[in-house]
Amino acid sequence: MSLAELFGVELPIIQAPMAGAQGSALAIAVSNAGGLGSLPCAMLSADVLRRELESIRAQTSRPYNVNFFCHTPPVYDAAREAAWRARLAPYYQEFGLAPGAIPPAPQRAAFDAATADLLSDFRPSVVSFHFGLPTLDLLTRVRSWGAKIISSATTIDEAIWLESHGIDAIIVQGAEAGGHRGMFLSSDLTTQVGVFALLTQVRSAVNVPVIAAGGIATAEGVARALALGAVGAQIGTAYLLCPEATTSPVHRAALKSEAAQHTALTNVFSGRPARGIMNRLMREVGPISDLAPAFPLASGAIGPLRAAAEKLGSGDFSPLWAGQDTTGCREVPAAQRTRELAGA
Image (tube, rainbow, N blue to C red; front, side):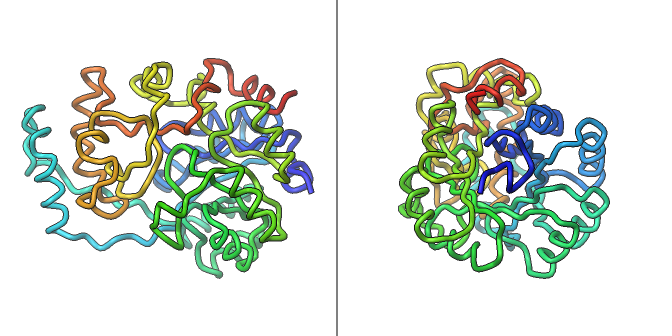
């Protein structure tokens, strides 16, 4: 089966959903170019999500993907939050910030019935999930309008689990991928392996189509994934410099600098492991810190530091998400980048 047969697209390219670095404009451009554009929805309110979906519906008739998180919301731990803020206290002092005036991080809602109700008005062709899957009743709702369901696996066990829950395709997320790891059966980072090694193993373990993701930034990389049995490649980092992306100025500058050659997995920005360009906070506090509160609570204490540093043109306290290969980042329209990645 090809990606065209699976999703009704022309090219074997899925644009990875990148919360904080894109909105509907990037998804529309990729879908109109023949790939599968994706809208990251985990950080959107219901009103904003509806507006974004209306924008997509008005500007493309092609298939598109909407992406949601399936994490279990954490219980607030006052002692852990206090310890985290104490670790960050020298930085608050450096920027003249009052720790007591910094509000807690807002929760990020996981996929729920209200969201399913909203989506039913739009009936997107593909719905993808990160950190596992929602409950069976919610999956049944999504399937009721004919949507394909996909989710990320970072290990063979996760891939087998997803297949057992009736998924239509599996995104094989290699360790090279930028942004948050889709881990959901284990938090052990030693289980995370490269995309092509994982792709080969998962292909032998499941019968559903697989999609390669992680460090793929060129047409040659896409071709290799297809040669190893993937039906397509999910690509994010290579789109971050496109004009349709909302990538921040400091993030764009980092992607174009030598600093982009050094990425690492870190939990200091959100509380879950995610790959980004190494910066000051990652070097001095992490990159992995036992003090960071559970996802997404770690972000609250970081937010004011990020804002203060970015006002000065610095990304020292910003999550500069990027995969291990940033050489594919180009300041060209997303439609052109999509065709290039597909070798078209």
